Amino acid sequence: MLFLVFKIRKNAGQDGSSIELLSKTQGAGKVKRSATPPPITNHLLTIDFYRKNKIVHAMIIEHPLYKHIEYTDETGKLASKDIELDEAEFFIRMPVQGDAVKISETIRPGAEKLLTKIKL
Image (cartoon, rainbow, N blue to C red; front, side, top):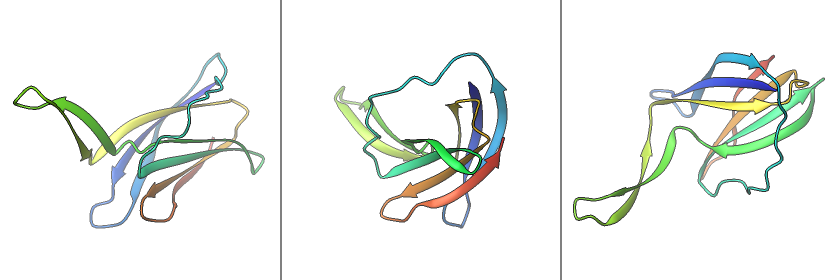
């Protein structure tokens, strides 16, 4: 397994975000197949894993800069709201046999935008 830790930031005054790879760690294990459907949200990251320039695995996760939170308001009732962060860290797991990762974001209503493609 390869564990990749990223920092994502909003680009001030521009559309989209920027991503920086903070660390890469190799360890034992394997990717568990999940029956969980993709998140139902308007803010997504699409992560494509490559080996020899071919996609070998893809995943969709909630965008780390856009959170939907639930909380108790001042009257004690459950409430929810959407918040936007300026930056956040997140990690992904990938099979070691991958040699590159491509990360794109989708902020609806908009098209998918490539953020980075990193050789590992």
